[in-house]
Image (cartoon, rainbow, N blue to C red; front, side, top):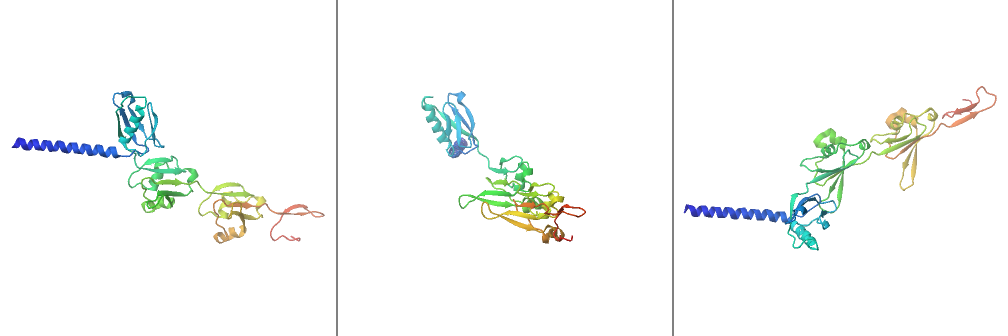
Length: 303
């Protein structure tokens, strides 16, 4: 009786093991291959054809004799049939091919734009935008004042949703200001926006736009107005609606400096601040100092 019970137990154990093995094999064979999966391919009796390969971005692999094979979204058994068919076409008679999955594609997130190491990274639960930027080596100088956004695939409909990130707030506030990533998310760091200063300033040129930038602050960044522009007009040239439409906004720079914020004007990205040269007037004839003079606002003939 004891022997019979033991025999039944061993038989059931063997059946369970076989069943589990079949299920695991069936589950693997039903797996559909995607980019970055690592596969092992063997042909019975041809050890030199044993190949370890990674599925390329275009969904293909390369195999001896037959070259490139498109296998994206195929199951392992479908890949076996495809390689068998191709090898049978003049290369090997009755080939027996086996394909196994060595490493499936890991979940990833991506960081692009103005970071030190753009690219794809292994996804881990709980990783945030700030963590992602840290993994990518941080924001480079070209993106310090740029916009950071999170591009996420929409669930309900095709396409992506862009979420603007207050990266400064996220860093300062920690977890409360940060956003937790999902697999497939793309973090994009845009380049710094610019504004421009031309005319009679010490350092004309291109400057990084910051959120609270005003005309007075911009002139300060450019080293101030030089003597040739002390009494010249200051204006902001701003892009209007239309491709080649611009608007010129005159600035009372003296009032802006004296009154502070109330007399100043906030800049926008791509604004051009222009400091015109001092206007001149000329005095000639029987006087002590004939010549050229700077025209000031309240200048009269007597002055």
